[in-house]
Image (tube, one colour):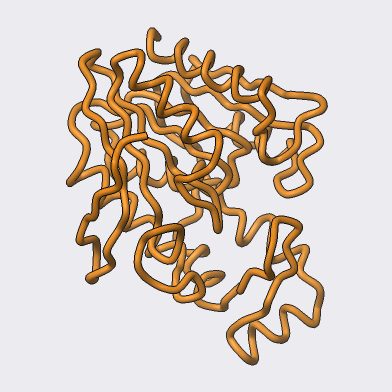
Length: 249
């Protein structure tokens, strides 16, 4: 992996990132999931492949995630969207292929909407656009909703580790950044990888996204035994093959 550098991001938020320029004219940007970071297996494997293939590669941690400054519970969808745009604007050059995992899929679609001239392609892994409103809030128990409304926060149990703070500010900010209420105008290549055993983002959510994206160059791959993370060796091999294919699209 390349060394970690620091970017003075929006509102003084210092963001950790890795960046390797490429020679191929193609550059990949990794956008992580909710409460995830750029140290995961998928991103490091993708970085190794991209650099070896001569492609540019950038990964970063949203504020409150990984090595970036800030507390996770202080973050909102707005903050993480702003962090994403800061990295795209200040670190990367030329046309980009965004690779978004889970919430990173939402961040990718928001970035494409905000910087349409920069985005050449999208690779979305278990994409979770609008998840705070369409997936999370409807499934919260009533006691959790009451705590969020009254106290501003609820600690959500997580199968991946410590409980995760779900804040009223994050939920409300999500309502201001919805992308699935209308067609998503993008004509570049799109590749979506989705596990059918995903307990966090149902595969029907990704299927609904397919219907909204206007691109005709879109491939939707369902992995019947795949979970949300899609981090098994065969899943990562599929991801790398997909990125190699879209680099030549």
